[in-house]
Length: 122
Picture 1 (cartoon, rainbow, N blue to C red):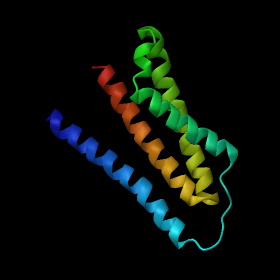
Picture 2 (tube, helix red, strand yellow; picture 1 turned 30 degrees about the vertical axis):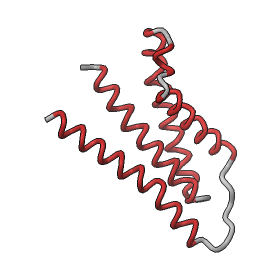
Picture 3 (cartoon, rainbow, N blue to C red; picture 1 turned 180 degrees about the horizontal axis):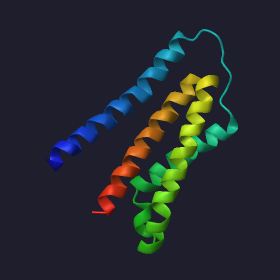
């Protein structure tokens, strides 16, 4: 049962990742005119999402004391997910090529946050 749920979550994350990078490529090829560039705050939010992922993947939270890591991990991830969702919605009107990868990264981050929070409460 657990292996089946894990495979389903892995497939969903894989599909979202695939669509996150393929759809903007098609939009960029079809778009003839130059669009508006993304806002500076959108670059900041996307950079923070990527920085947080890199910190997580290189086990940066394991270097922190356990009580500090427990207090910091979930709130930072949720705040970045909310900021990423707001950025993706706002930028979708302005620049779809930038908004779709941010939305995909935010969705994957939110799914992993919920998944890790659920596992930590078991």
